[in-house]
Image (cartoon, rainbow, N blue to C red; front, side, top):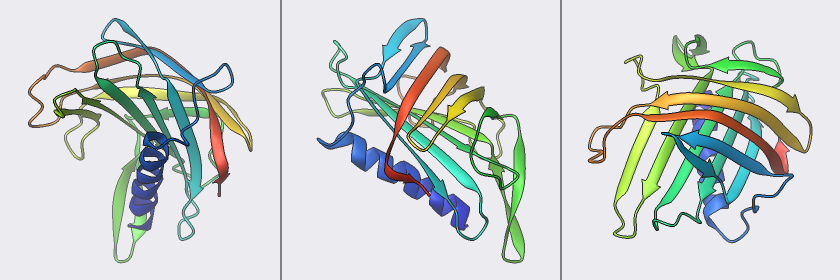
Length: 192
């Protein structure tokens, strides 16, 4: 449960930090680019952090990227999280939606996936749409993040994923993200 809470708090902290005025602007040192359903996606804000769960010792990587400059007036956000199954510090390697692992939690255990991805869209009319993969227990979506560099200041990786729409998403259709790459500067003190 603590690891699940760490993933949630990491993501929540990133969302809060990225929406506010202190969010780091995308630069040559801090960027995320991808192709989403055949269209270019270039984030205008990118932020990342690595958090270590004190109980399990597992490293959780979280990244948020926002395209606030979309001509359509839609704000698009992308979230990626990755967790080391072996408890080692987060590092270089491939993280996959296809691989899961068990984490003891009291008398039971919790199943985690090495990688999760989500896309949010908000339009000018305050409508909110959500795609995520994989959803617990249904095997939906696929994807990988291949981390090529990790330091105390940044993480670099390539990625791709397929994310089906969440229930209630009136836009529908799976979001296909390909040719993804990022170099994310870690928030001050974000490596725990």
